[in-house]
Length: 156
Length: 253
Image 1 (cartoon, rainbow over the protein chains, first blue to last red):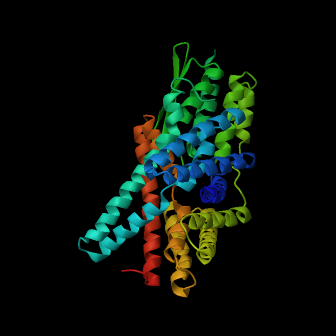
Image 2: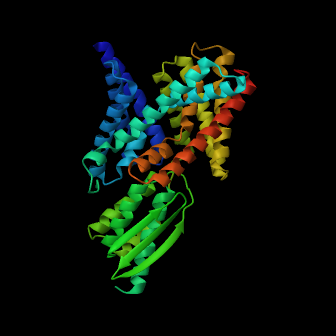
């Protein structure tokens, strides 16, 4: 129990840093940076919690992105700023970067071999599918509040 | 409403839409803000058609239409501009801003960006945290921070000289991977693969990808597909950089 708590804390801390870093690349105004950090920390640690209880990474990502979506709509209503501003920075820690990296490296190796190698092919297919499905889960989860609740009226 | 007033309002609305698209807002937001702003300023309706690098806007008052087209040139993502424009739209809707005020505020918008001395260490730390989250040891995290900071300063230096974005990504990926390979050559870490995977994560085109999928989900299919294509091209060019650096380092192949 204590281990899980420490792991979640570790997750929250180390996913808040990239959220702020990438928010600065997107030039989010300084007064909104803490909210990006909060969104990133909550989203990533929720995903770790769900995966700890045996949920597959795609569904965990979907739920975490939906949480980030609801949270950022709350922020947006308070500050009168577009919700996507917080949301994209907050989900950056969950973007399937390593899966995409492994897919592409395996593809390049497959090209260099110039014959079909079953191991590398399996790696390309499984990592590539994981990348696509996690990306889809992220953005559909993020759009969930406006698909379900804010159907005909604007968010702010 | 006189013809020149309609002209004026339409110009302001299309300027706002152009700025929103150029600084990376999603299509749904562009459409919503320009329609609300137009109606708040007194137009009967605003119809807008967005494609990947241009937009067409028609405003209607008293059965009289004005259609105007603008070319969009990408300026990179700047959320502070988008935020400011959203605020202008909301304040106009509440009746606080009139047309003259809107014109003044829109003309005053400057795309501000964070200075290099904050950006480079922040990106280094971000990629270091990615490496830690993937399970790298301390030396791996240090190598990642070094590689990502070097890559980010190269990226900002190239961006300042207005080179093509694809070229920029290839060169940045090359430099980053070259530095991140240190883990293999110096043998100070047990997880030499992680710095290479984590430090190039700063090149993941996260914003174009999320924008692309949310555009497609909300029905702007052609804009979404072209943004997706742009994100894919960026990824491919960073892969070229990574591959060249790996071949120079003699890691695989």
